[in-house]
Length: 288
Image (cartoon, rainbow, N blue to C red; front, side):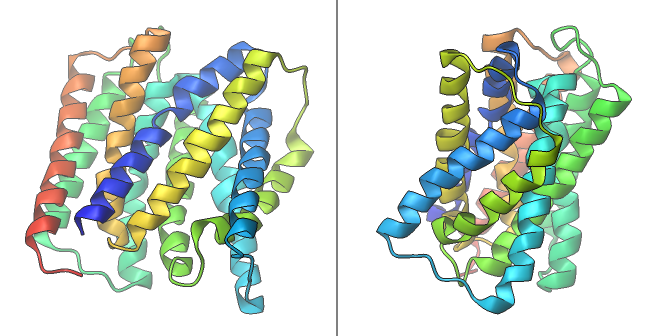
């Protein structure tokens, strides 16, 4: 089980780079949806190479509809909503709003996978959401950007779509490796974004940032994430991954001078407390 926690922590840390790197892409003149498109299509290239090298290219006919839905919700809608939220309310605040996801995950996991809601899970989720609320309240001084209605909507939407990654990922993880799965869902997601994109000129800096988003923040992060899901149930993975907004907030401060108030930083501590509580419970349990 320790291996599962380590993999999820690595994945969350790599995802924490998405917001700060995306802001560099926006500074170079790209729209959020174009950034989302290139993130998906370039990452597809990396996953495709991996899948063909490992000869992991099979797909079952009965899984095609589910993968298509996953591609549209987990790539088109998720990538687009998250990039839009970053552009409107900043990298740190967008990353925190993403972590409304554990609530959706807990409910959907109970419905679809019959996972138990233990006292430790409930306590960890409570700490997490109090922390998320604190970071949201403390984002008003974040590089001069507050939480506006549009940014809030796209941030919450990205949280819901993020939750679907845990549900679909758990559903497909037993039958498909991450390269095999993303070989099919990423092109669906990219083409789902295509009608809404206004392409622009891209500088070498923009291309470098886009490749970083695709390889480090997508290919490498998902690889570790789906490896972690093999060892953890989805609710635990969702809570452990809440270190992502802490990583994003730290990088956003160093790189883009985004910062929180005291309440925001206190919320970050509560998020970490929830993560530690979940890890300690998992390591002390006999869960496979």
